[in-house]
Image (tube, rainbow over all chains, first blue to last red; front, top):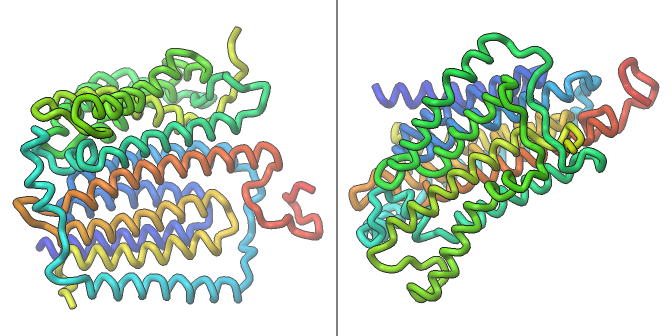
Length: 310
Length: 115
């Protein structure tokens, strides 16, 4: 029964990926990609990676889909490019891609047995962190440096997006609201956010011991904020607002400060003092959740569209 | 050789196929937006291969090796950042040139081409 489910999931994933590659219009391809993201989330459940499944469904499908749809609407009236690739190029590309896939498949079928794993090492050190979710422990304790750098990447990407605004709009606000807001959207934007915020807080809190965590919580918060902005209930903030910029960097800044305090308190960068690891990690996570939510929201909103007020 | 009926192997092979499909879209499709979507499919395939490796590494009471799982979460967030930046660049390209592709415009003023 489960094997059948796996086969159906894999077939659906491949069919949707081919649809994205072959669909005539971009909008159809993007809708296919969103469905692909949700199916992929189910696939991650079957791989027993609930944390990844939540992230994939929220970011891979949902937020990326919204971002792509926004730009598709913006660039729609461009003359649709004909298939300009020559048949010889297509054939060469197909041979190359099949070779890459075959190579990867060969590797997967011949993975070493018994498989190498870090699970025992992760389990052995889990007690010292006070956490029970091993994925959160990897993200915020054993490999915290990766997570810190990833936050910096998010900020750098946002700086890049903002810099693409024309000079006279620099510091202004992005515009998400469509010309006509449909009634159901306006209704949902009033009803959903309280529940969304509650789910996000739960997901942040439970992430220490069970699947969930900062990204998932931050993404849900960002989705609620985007919903409110899409429905035009609140305009997007001016990108030069000081409060906005402080919110963007509070997470990485707290993370970095704790990292340097580690030298004084525990003898190393990003080291946590024994016994206090869990409260420190939760503090970092709380600040990060806020920053991730604001960063994701602004990344999806895109560059400034209006001149700064005053 | 491991059995295909094992979910780790099955989803690993699915990941390998997705890498091929995504790469093909990135190389062949003239529209930049579609290439960005293809890039995301390629990434999803690589993450699934990580997932297969993580699932095989189950042990010590966990159903999967948490290290590759955490790396995939970081990877998804970084891939999203790259997508957001690429999409913003595409939007700027469109605002400046009215086109959403890098292919040279058709030579003889085809209807719809802006030259």
